[in-house]
Length: 280
Image 1: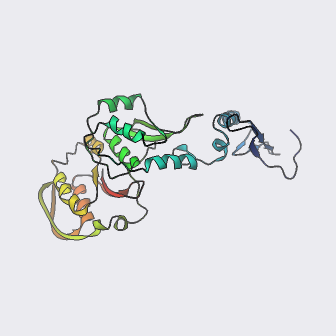
Image 2: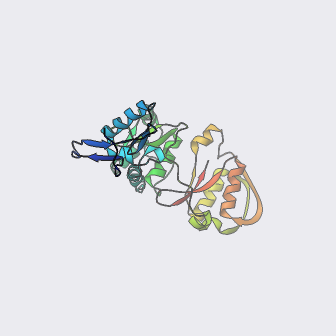
Image 3: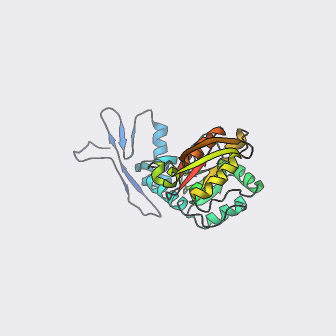
């Protein structure tokens, strides 16, 4: 501790090596009794917060202290690594595959570890075969979609002193990897086929039959949130859809059909920007 010089600034330097770091920290104690350190400002009441600061520094290095965090509490560098794994295409058939087999196939492609917790391990071990074909989507969106049908979610997680893992756990209210992302452009721009006009009349067809009739025409993947349908006791094979003869566009047909089933449809994109229609 010494008097301040005009050029003093909070600083953090590793004077050791990457394998054996030795951190030299310079803090500024202000006249208002604040301790200013790189990445934090502390008062006398912040003893636990200050203890946590040095614990994180010792466990995870300077980036844990100085780099801002965003989604899932990850730094930009950490999130980029997660996204790089989850943006890879699913290049195999998923329908009929055991969920554990799908995870094994993806793990061989990932740099980060897929880490189901005990509950997820039990659910996946007892789960029925996958009923959706998501081989045309990226790993993040496809995996989030399939896990949702088993009541599970994917959540990147960084524990103190540990590398980032992609945790699989039971669904709750905490943030998890989404089933696709809202497109930055309009639906007509990301999926122009949805805005094509046609003459249509629907009478005596179920929601499933309506979707099966539209999907080959638009060549756009259509997926249902099976967990949401089950929770609300909605059977797409039983819900009858009626649409009087009219001239409209494909998106309007799908939107009105899902609304009649007390559901909502939206256009979403995967990590590579591939569009699909999501019913939930």
